[in-house]
Image 1 (cartoon, rainbow, N blue to C red):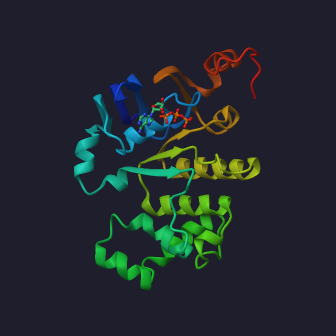
Image 2: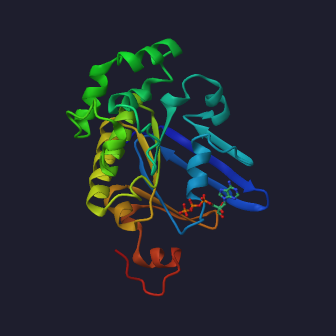
Length: 252
Ligand SMILES: Nc1ncnc2c1ncn2[C@@H]1O[C@H](COP(=O)(O)OP(=O)(O)OP(=O)(O)O)[C@@H](O)[C@H]1O
């Protein structure tokens, strides 16, 4: 892992009207870190990811990506090269062939003409095919996306991210709609690719088990605040029980 700080939050606060969703959060995340964001429902995980991804404006405080304010990044053309998002709903266009969804990772780099032309004749096809091979979808490039299973569609979304190649990947509950075997596969693949590409990953998860298995650092949130922020090996069952306010301290 490099020592370069990719994400820096200083007193980051987000209110929705009177509701404080994020309460003065401060933390730094270095390049190459694999961070799992855990905590009870309503803790603020999605709001934090959406803030870093520039999808919701922050109310106060500071958010720097690679040393530059988020707003400065958003004004430039290269935001898609800095931050990529992957979600539970995959955000794919169902009626299009898989290859077009993968190449959507290039839209921010391509001009309008090249993007439109690509719908007729896929541009940079080899890049998309290679990404599909890497996620185990060899031979599926010209299938209609909506006919693929949930696990396969999440792989398409990952292939799209590989084509986009952002420095920071934000994943909001990426495996919530998948069965345990598929979820395991997807997280194994996602963390492997991110490590190979030296990207930085923050993933919100409901499963503590997956957080411990695949991530090097766990940030837990409760009521809009950071409850603990620790290397995975330092996270104890007692802390987890307290986070989720369980009576029994036994966790997976
Ligand atoms: N657009 C919104 N308008 C008003 N309140 C919101 C909005 N988005 C989130 N909130 C509130 O902010 C708080 C944090 O919500 P958030 O979705 O970030 O939590 P979460 O930890 O991701 O929860 P979950 O695990 O259930 O997805 C909640 O109380 C939620 O009701």
